[in-house]
Length: 514
Ligand code: HEM
Image 1 (cartoon, rainbow, N blue to C red):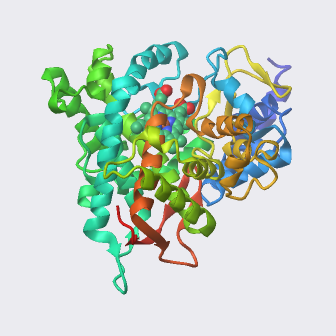
Image 2 (cartoon, rainbow, N blue to C red; image 1 turned 30 degrees about the vertical axis):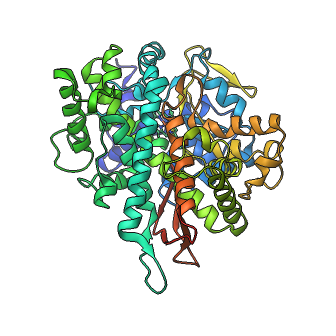
């Protein structure tokens, strides 16, 4: 002990003014600097900006400003096929890697981000399940509702909502001469997709179109929540805080009087009614009945219903808005689409909403929709990340240790010059018609990755395409549309998705009315 004294004594004799900063430095080093360096070192072989590799805050801050999708796309172009965007998230920008990561054979699991789609911490919807075996078991039980008779029933519901949209226009928004009745289309697109999603799920729409307004402040509250998903994409670890007390208390719940909680309560009641004895319209099997019959427990069906409304609304309304914007700003495409639709109805005159099968004959219509999904792909921000399995993996020659989160840069995939020709940044539907059948299939195979693929593929893909094909055919057949604000038709922000506001349009009845 005597021999140790000289070593122990000096620090103990230090005055508090020196001791406190020393203790703080020690804490800083052990709690922040060392973990940061260890984290940095784990993926230091992956290219990317140094600051991004040290802290998630760089990208998180970026998501709060417009242009975060473009930011990731620029990083991919600057750094190559694999880029480190945060200390634990790497991004690829090619279709082949996307297909591989989502394939059944690859053992990747869903990333931490998906924990945010858990509405009830005791129950799971398929989209939030991160364990591959459990989600496989659940998905097998979900799929049958989305084909055959189930899909045919959904098509009828889409038709009803296209009809409801036309009724709304006729009631309130037909302009003529000096009488302008402007419509804010951003919200009306959401009303349409929300009414389709709720009708497909619960057998009847929430009635956004009927009311021509928000229902129970659902949209108002989700609009506040959406940008948050961008930040959470950068900092998925925040999920642990959000799922714990006290933040957990602030999350939506079935007891809420407005917003998301109302949807939760509605889903609970609808499922309960089916369990207690059939609430379906005139004997039609609806989606809830099909899920229950396939052996999914009632509490889990509630979770699936909530997911469906969320997954099926904003996604499709983005494509509706951006397609309309592209058409309004490209007169040649607008005229061609209208001419194609007119020619079709010359041959086949009917008041009924066009069938999904018949829309397939409208080649230019699909070129327009595919081109929009290419230029403004859904999920352009850092969302939907997946996690590297326990074995680790090597992508583009870089080793990724287990637990690394990996995400796709959709803009990199859909703006690949080799696949889409050098004018990739231009919205030009003709490229789809100029392509050989093989090229066309390859191009669509890349763009449709916006619906994900493999074990994660979107269940509502056919419904979304139906909505888009039918809406444009029936609206362009009846009305002429012009933007109200010519200098700036809408305000657009790219983030976790393409958020827009103030998209004012003027609809007039076409001379040759059907
Ligand atoms: C353009 C429109 C749409 C796009 C781009 C889209 C995209 C996606 C993506 C990327 C996923 C997978 C996320 C992941 O797990 O990695 C997904 C899942 C899902 N989507 Fe869609 N979606 C669209 C429309 C719809 C519609 C209209 C519905 C329903 C009416 C729907 C229902 C679902 C459901 C239920 C899932 C979960 C599937 C699962 O858990 O495996 N989606 N969607």
